[in-house]
Image 1 (cartoon, helix red, strand yellow):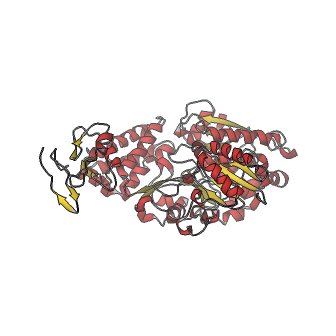
Image 2 (cartoon, helix red, strand yellow):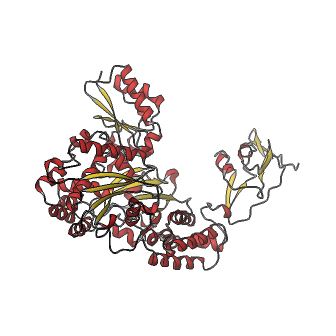
Image 3 (tube, one colour):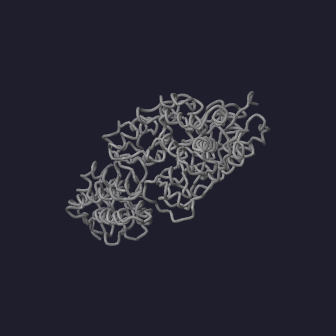
Length: 628
């Protein structure tokens, strides 16, 4: 029997839940009860742990042992071995390559080593549905300090001195925005937490609400006190049901504890917080579109100035901050502006959360100090590129961000550095691409996304994105013409200059940066009708090498278009006229044969049907190449 209490911190963020975490929780509790262990070993459902590539995952405290990729079938053996016999199960652990000689602890795992957890300080260590867990880790101490010892102007001054900038993309100084709103005479005033996160591959804000919703509740309440608002809203897209559920529970609990509502903590300050669910329009990430959505109107932006801090929700002064920005506020108030300003770079203070996805060994949610380099994130935290492939580019800032080439891998991550290379911080998406990525195709993908999400109000964005997409599509289909690249550059600059909101002004970034750093790929598509990465279907063909084909019938059976001909012992041939270029034959061909090849920009060699396979018997080749 264990001599001390053990806590099993089970990740129940969206990713792990999708992988079966709730079934694992039931299995753990049942198995612990069967062995009479529930008093010594307890299961704590936490929010997102961060190491999403290993989910469903479990951290054993206080031992700091990390189990990943768990299945319900693993639980009986795990409970019996680890919690009854005291023998941790190595085959269920994540094993860093350099630590194979002993059981790795959480601190040994490179994914966690270079992170600095401020906003995500409670991830994986509290039950997000229990306010007591948040309070036990100094939760709401900052709110108490504000309401008992600081004036609204003191709070604004502290946030201004800290150097906190908006984490939603633009990087505008938070204290300046609060000060402008506070100085407006018109009342009422409103505060909005923006959780309309729609970037492909991004899930920072969602995970924050799932793992630590009270940090947002406390931060937005302090912000409301500073600007003089008595009503606040958190705008969350409806595709985030778990985040909404946990935030709603946090709001109810905060009201029950006197931390929201009338006369908070016995002070003269009252504040109410509500959730507004968005229907998934990407443009609602832009603050004026978000305001129109809350008001019940069409989610379209308007010209600025006046800015929302002057004229916002229902014509009243309104502060809109990203939820990550607001979650920084309690830590700044508790630990001081100087402490926060000491982290990061001269112009970019504090930390930033990124979702690290794509062609990377360790995918997940990370929080790192501003100024860390791309190399440290990709190689040290991310574990490098799978399969020994080479890094080609990193896309930051969501679909409106830029693609940064491998030559800039030592670039420090801050607002100014990213802007200099044509990208942006954005909300924190970071997509890693390897050598097998076509940068023209990537550019087309992101323009397709932003074109679909454009509200269509201004012609520069609406028609400009249509034209960009048309040219990019033509290039990837082998119909590119001389002058297309120059046209893309000219049109991209015009769209940036003339668009009304941030969606349009940043929309051409993927196009302009891929041309800037990967012009040779555009030229190959246009001049040589070749896709160097062999990704673009119209420029790619599949061919079976007759010298390597073993006539195993696998590709012929799996081909959905029935475009492969052959028999047992007869070399297979792809009918190029019928081939749909789905790539199934390439995927299913056994690696030790490697007979199916991808070709681009060269004529497909002809292969005569009916040729028998050349085999080897007793070490001597037997020639059986006979025409049928």
